[in-house]
Image (cartoon, rainbow, N blue to C red; front, side, top):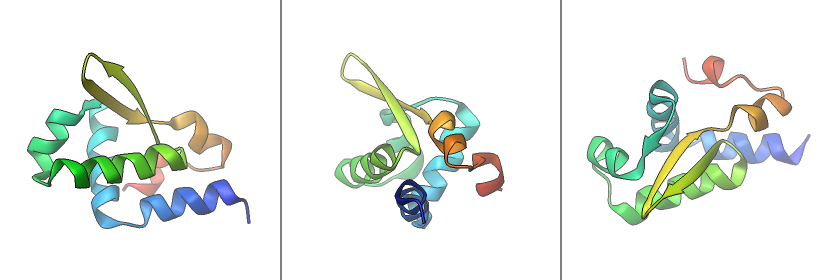
Length: 89
């Protein structure tokens, strides 16, 4: 089995991360501050979840000042034969 797919599935296998992905997918791009307000989790916990998904290729981010904005990494997912809209139904 392809290692990238395994890492993606591990990243999406956590219910908190799956909920984060669902929220980000609806917004197209979301700042960390908004995610903290919506999910009411400690900032280090949120950062850990987001970093796991970035490392797996599920999310990408851009930095604007001190704020990170996250979006679904559709290209990486499609290269691995995955359609995020089918995963997050």
